[in-house]
Length: 293
Image 1 (spheres, rainbow, N blue to C red):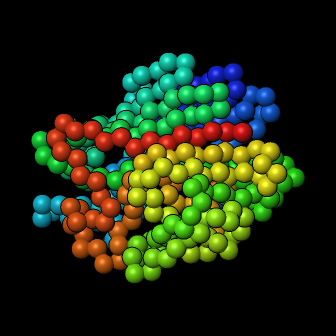
Image 2 (image 1 turned 90 degrees about the vertical axis):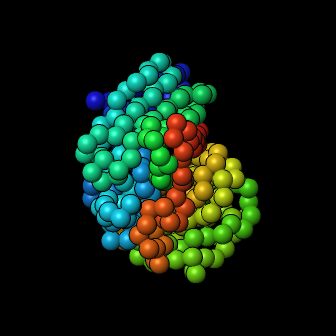
Image 3 (image 1 turned 60 degrees about the horizontal axis):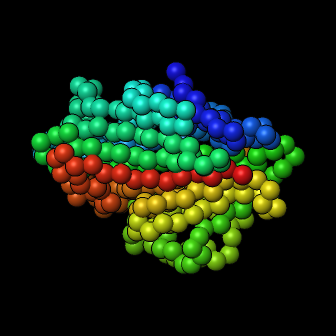
């Protein structure tokens, strides 16, 4: 099933499967902003990543002397959430642990994804993780929304650009295959807007370290006639990605509170690079918003 939010400007559709944002449509222009999940390129719209972001070495980890297996980006995106709150402008979806999740992630948790239309063209998204266990839990969380580029017929991928504010040099994390290699970290200068070119994604995503500092990222046509701005409040990283070899007509902008295993990871969940620790009865919130124009 799906849930609809709308105001005078935009219509938003969210699937209960994965609490995934699947459509954002401008009522006046008819523009559809979200990637349509064509499986020939990438069969998802905007998956929510929990309780890991990226890939574990060997798709496994150790906790309390036991080995667990978990696929890339975790299991939340492939589970149906419960709709626990709904108004005209707000929808809150919830996933809690069960026997199946406990077999691969041995923690009791509550994971809420909250969508809120805050202004005419702005959708706020929040991830709220609550520790319902009696001991610390370890997790990562993140978003993976894909946006159509180009947005209109007759346009080209290269007609679009990305701009990151504040404009400065960011530390850029590098992957070797699916794993993080901190020895290869470099800098990435955003003082010049990034024109969309497929060669920039030959080695996977452009990953910037944000260190929980707020940033705004614009994906727009060169004429700035239409596009989307992501305002990230407190994420550790952002990934910018499109499949290199497939000439896919979309770009994903991904706020992350966590990242893939490092190439030298020892497999212990408590040692995992970028992991978050949450004490019993405590709550973590990560948030971002999308403004469509």
